[in-house]
Image (cartoon, rainbow, N blue to C red; front, side, top):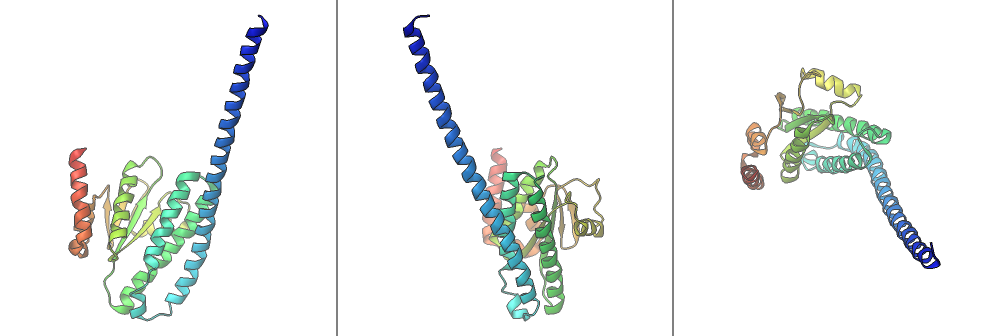
Length: 233
């Protein structure tokens, strides 16, 4: 091999090293930024959980008129969206994600119990949906989550609480047993105003299960879009 060949191979090797180094640098930067964003979201979730605990204490002393205008339901939904993103990024088996989900689940249960107490105290009717999902090979659970997110985002008439039924948390196990839901039952499972419905429920199905949603024009538009999308598939 002559000197010219060595020179060409040297140039190729040098270019390869430069390109690899540049790729590694950019990849490392992106991963670091992503980890930083995830950590920031995790910190916000932890802070929000603490904030909601204080809100519960404040709301327990409020009047019926004040309670009727609380924004806590939407805030719980936003917190749930952040947790879902965090779980997607770090994985459902991540230890910190699991602990945050447990705290969030207990927070939802507190709000659920408060809703029942409010309904009795103030003589009001509140539509409540308990959504039990699983992370273990449940594609319908993903679709069901989208449907319920649409309901939550487009109406204040319904309280939606989502629980990972596989989470090792005594309170969730107790809630499942209260409604007679066993490990043999297939996810997703909805409990709408105390009635259990197994299997995926479309947006139209959910509206049929909750009469108070009939007058929601925004949901009617979403249902039309859902029907069109279904026909196109």
